[in-house]
Length: 236
Image (cartoon, rainbow, N blue to C red; front, side, top):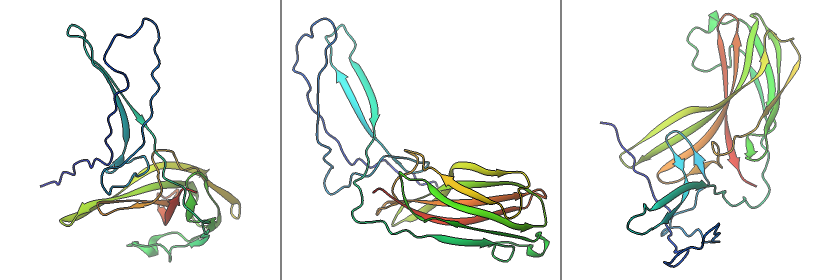
């Protein structure tokens, strides 16, 4: 039997913007503001649109009208950013080398064509408002290269004491090379983290939101080479 996770409400506030009465003809603007106060000991997480985890904040305006007129309701989403992390983010550069011997979960390693791919990521600790950068070089490959892609993945974990469900889904896919590229040619890695579909890496008692990037190399004989790098996103 599939487990159904119910939404968790972390904020709920209602204010009366105007007293009952008649509005004058023409355009009427009613300014308003209210503090974002959470319920109990809950935390105001950053807005995030995922597949199995969604963090959304909405405003709903209701206008009650006389008996013969229909009430009016309008709802819109507003965006919440988490507070900037204090201190300086320590970069965590990663150098990588991809060969048939370094690949994980390969059943028929002997049938793979020989190849050597080197590169680096500037940091796997990433500021969410700055791009992921690096470089990749195909040093050698027996088979022709068809394409090289960067795949950004969200990893969402939901659960409680009864059990957890962990799912990885693609956010975006960017092609950084097309065709059988020159050997030894540096290829820049540059990926912007999309707003709303990413957020600072998050871990709570009920769910986790993590991110990874895959470097995917497709050869002309349909061999698919994938190298995975976990990322930690933060807001500075």
